[in-house]
Length: 90
Image 1: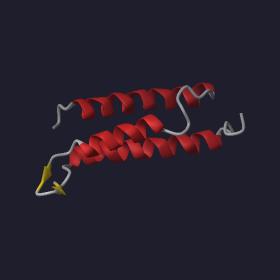
Image 2: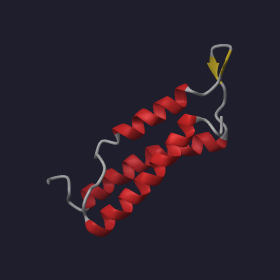
Image 3: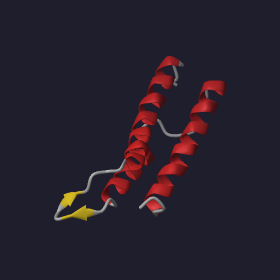
Image 4: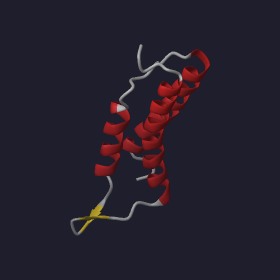
């Protein structure tokens, strides 16, 4: 699971979002979408790829949970930065 395609995609998106947030802070220009749709889609793909036992989700180990939570927090951070830089009206 740790080397799965959904997890690798998740990690690439996290890296890209951090770079985009850094550019947003430095330049004030948003280079990714505001909604975080790509992050949401990737999170759902990762969640659905988790192994299931007897019809129930197995417990998510800390590494997977951390990636899922980090993606969720990145969307919230992006919204806060946009509002604080007053970019929501452009």
